[in-house]
Length: 81
Image (cartoon, rainbow, N blue to C red; front, side, top):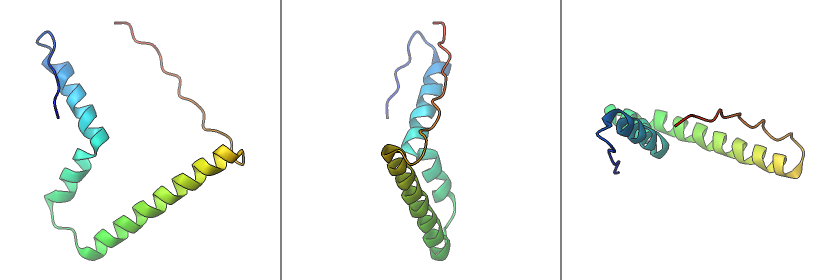
């Protein structure tokens, strides 16, 4: 992973790096590797994640078919640069 530092602005580059790492799931993976995870706990976590993914997929499918209202769009205030 690579982040460019522009105009010696390390703080902004660090923020960009953290955001990229968050999107890639690096923090979650590092936390998972800190300590041993028992196989039973791992199975339970993976099963819960699979259920969450399936529910999300079903919810999106129902929204496409018009059975559920579409989620409200977030209003993003434009930033001055």
